[in-house]
Length: 287
Ligand SMILES: NC(=O)c1ccc[n+]([C@@H]2O[C@H](COP(=O)([O-])OP(=O)(O)OC[C@H]3O[C@@H](n4cnc5c(N)ncnc54)[C@H](O)[C@@H]3O)[C@@H](O)[C@H]2O)c1
Image 1 (cartoon, rainbow, N blue to C red):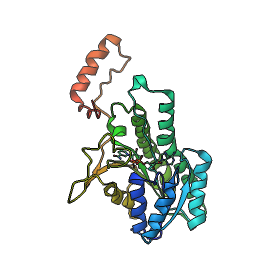
Image 2 (tube, protein in one colour):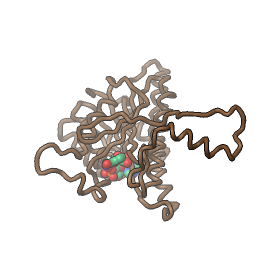
Image 3 (spheres, rainbow, N blue to C red):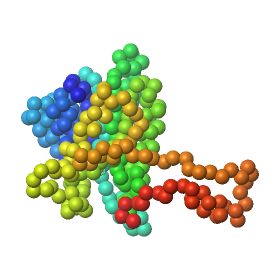
Image 4 (tube, rainbow, N blue to C red):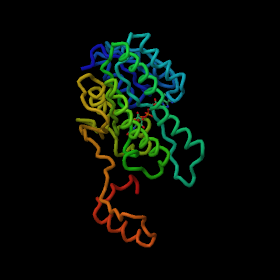
């Protein structure tokens, strides 16, 4: 599926990103394994030990100049870049009323800007390739979350960042269609260092049989979305265990056009009439 393709996976030193890197390596891709720490080197070595090809690149994906360096690393090591899997992320959970400015800023910086920066530099590379008459079958897979799709109590910063990832994916999918790049996002669930504290019970490995919450279960969809065979763009998929499910996002709802400005006293009854016709929102996680 991925034979010879060059793929960057961010935040691949552990958890879901590590599973992606190993899956790409097993499918014959050449992998650039990013993380902030030396775990990226360990995972690149794991890919190579399994017979694949990988190099490590250590750096913060939200850093503008590092984003350029990450793309350059792929091109210098392997001569090209075919796919970017934005997976790096972190959480700083806190009820909004207690959340610090630092907790807000860090999560928005890593989880949202940390998607934009590598995409921006990869996009410029693919545009240049297209202009030079050597277009690539380029793909981007971004990582949102159920928290970004439905909201999650105690995760206002993370939910906002992950909703932003979806909006960014939708816009970029249209903009980058000009040079044939296809972009999609996933909202995964798996047992990783990020979830092992809160979901230790519900995500525990069974004594035998299929291990539904193993991070490896998320990777086949990502490998396909990053492949030249993927012919869709701008969509979001929830993925966990053996389940793949396209998520249905915001839709325009019923409407009333008064043909003139609404008097404030008529607004409440109109809103209630409209909401009787609109489908109820999916409950926020943890509500
Ligand atoms: N595990 C789940 O159930 C779940 C659910 C929804 C979404 N997600 C998302 O999936 C992705 C992977 O999650 P995970 O559970 O494997 O988490 P994890 O914490 O196990 O791994 C995330 C990795 O990202 C790296 N990282 C953090 N900041 C970075 C930065 N600035 N630059 C480069 N790397 C950085 C970390 O060092 C770590 O290795 C994240 O985007 C997460 O938000 C996970």
